[in-house]
Image (cartoon, rainbow, N blue to C red; front, side, top):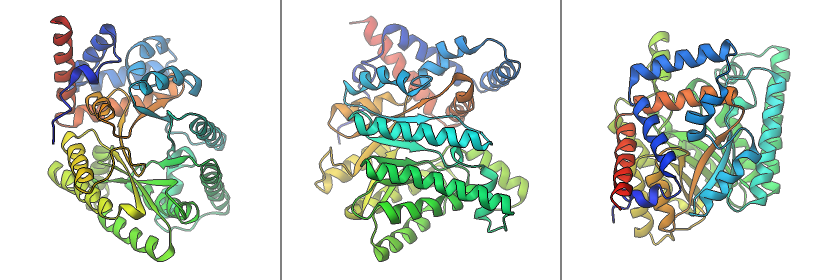
Length: 389
């Protein structure tokens, strides 16, 4: 397999020299863990104190990792990426809301993105987070099989209704729908809801995708059990496969509450688990569809090799590669240049509301060994290439 991910000219073909310098500066900052901690604290304080920092945030970290403040704002980025064959997934990245009116607003925004996806070839998927439609604590209570109060029953029925409205609309408009995974303690309830939607709307092909976080050691067992139910009941399985984004929070909670961590014991175990899931789904690709959400080059090469070995076309609609906007452009743009299906998650939302997402991105990059240094090395290579051309 040709090593295509070192081509920085392709990877950063859309970035101006100024944008390249900004990216290099940002990842230099993110590489400094104490600086990330201080920056996070200062940013949170500034936002809570309503200091006028939106402009500064937007000109730096926001514009690097986000597409815009609303869906219309994202379109120039969507169109620009699509000139290189890279599609977009508009991701309304407002997190941590607790009120019904906010959940209804997220429902309406998700329906807008479904409509956007229907109208634009450059946007092949819509997406939402389960906790965008209901409280995390409520999912946790449902998953733990705890009795609900009458008010909570009403609240949960509204969550189910929001799921139904979005999934039904996606099915009617023939738009593939990614449903993100979150903390393990809320995931059982979310899995049950998503499986119900698959059972209902994946009868003929995959419309609804759940997400498997493969840093959890129990996810292969879940996938195999789901596959058995799908075979018995006659529905297709769509899965976004990721490693996971809540490792520190998961391990800390497990330690505090005295239960075994759901996270694999090592990075290698997580990598192995991820690759096993890809292999399993590839062997059953006639009943499944894969959205390989990964910034890992080796995992990407493995999937490319499997596709070639099995005679699966690079642009087969059942197989997509996905990365986050602002990260791993060397994977995204080089894959697209070689004819593979690639989509970037393009977060958007009001600057202040998206800050929890941006802080999580910075912390994740700081904690994932090698990720930030790889980004820096690629950016440095491209800067030097441009200087010497």
